[in-house]
Length: 110
Figure 1 (cartoon, helix red, strand yellow):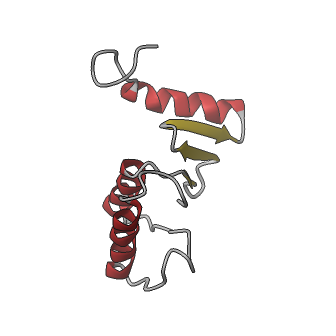
Figure 2: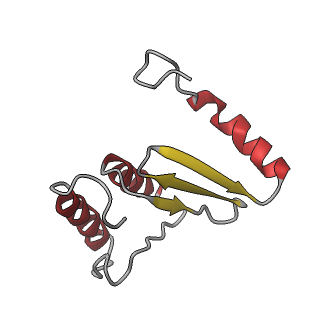
């Protein structure tokens, strides 16, 4: 989440993330603790965190516990999926089919 995105928005985005972390009991700055973990009951907090990161155009990784895949998101607005096996990749593709961007709905044409 470093040196990516609009220069004037970076401090605001960092402040949002650090305030969110403080609200959940973590008083360390992003400089000291650059990763964030979420428990099974923190779905909304995780979604808010990820939307803040996406909205600021930062790069990062999402590593779901026990899901045998990693999602890397980049400031180029691209997602990369790294899976343990082809079967895991195929299962992930099926889950994501509902989110396929459609031309004319704010997404670029393929």
